[in-house]
Image 1 (spheres, rainbow over the protein chains, first blue to last red):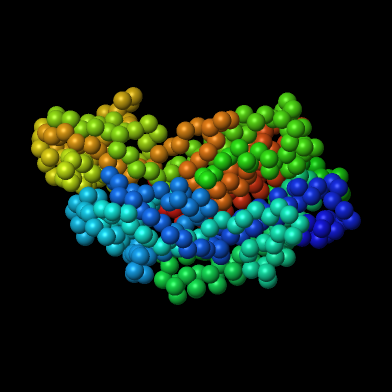
Image 2 (image 1 turned 30 degrees about the horizontal axis):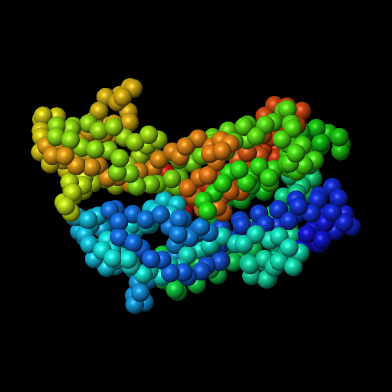
Length: 232
Length: 216
């Protein structure tokens, strides 16, 4: 993929845009794609040990966590996602109620509250959206769906042009727009799938995001004016 | 593995116009300390605009007669609070503003019993005022104030650069560093790229708001 990007940048072999920079750009594109679409998920076991508070940090258990999608108990029953207000309405002393977890509340980056609080180690199957593995070797294949791999090349070309800025960056904005279109398409598929699976979180609403400012390079800022004047 | 902002430095040298990471390290117009400061500024913004940095805190002790309690260092706002009296006995506190306290009880300042409400605007303004919360009624038993709070993490700097968020958010801080560096007045300034980097940050912030909750 970095060879393809290099050729599209008019370099038969990576020179001004070194291989390390192209690989970093492709990796960044994959990370952003996964973050916005939540298209990578995994299910792993979590042994929730009893503790003094009902709140647990999932990042300490799953280092590649983006967000939890679904929790299920050891018997395969769903642990329902609730808000803190719901738990308070249900049980005025819920932070100290012991039992087998039936509900959970998700707060912040990775904080999860279990209700009731486990009195012995509870086996919970956690399905979560995860970050992709970094691409390093020439034979590594991106983990996102194959039909979107070419969009990573588009993203990389836009990113490496940031070093030049001005008109050179502006010329690659349609490539970034193409990448974001792919994010929207994949995100809509994942959203429908997540709803069908009764997951507790859906991907970012890319269709509702105003891209006009993101895809515009401001011509009122000095280096852009200088570059345009030189062209004229 | 949480998000280590130090890894972002390796991703910046080419876009900042340097020949290598070593060339950036030897730079005089931009230092690693500057880049960490840009990332720390971005964290300060995120703390107020998204619900990213929520944590559980049980460091505040309640003693008999306590009417006002100090908040933990870095406290921004409280999402949920209760007092743990031990032995499985707890009391959830309703977050209440001072207007509601006066509507509830005109003599609320003199009441003492088991606290059932917590107010963040009933105390005094100024040093020592902000950063405290008022219990209603004042406590008559010892316990521990347990809270879910939004808390500003320690300052991002060399040697202390790990943030308690998903590692996939590292690129947000990379763009924060890029925006800060290129917006500075210098021979290397690229304000149009800095503006574009800020728009990319805005995209991340929108997604973070949806996934992790809103800020203040």
